[in-house]
Image 1: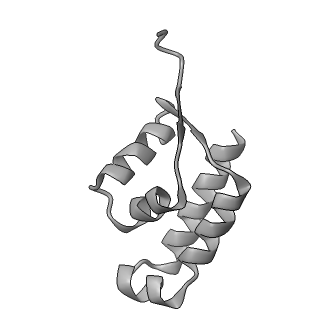
Image 2: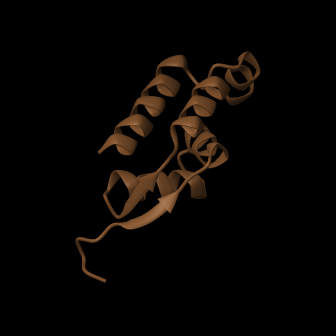
Length: 84
């Protein structure tokens, strides 16, 4: 495999949610590979809709202690990765 070839990967909503909650877990490591262009992320619009819905659940905001700005930024990153 050439160095410039990105590895294709599909992340579901659970992986994306896990990546928002802790920067040191395996899901976050996977998302960093996407950001570093080692992995090419394939996410459906339906998964992004689910991600947005889950990140906006009051229970998730309380339990994860995830600031609203961070969840919005993460969602935006996912959309950018999907469309790039």
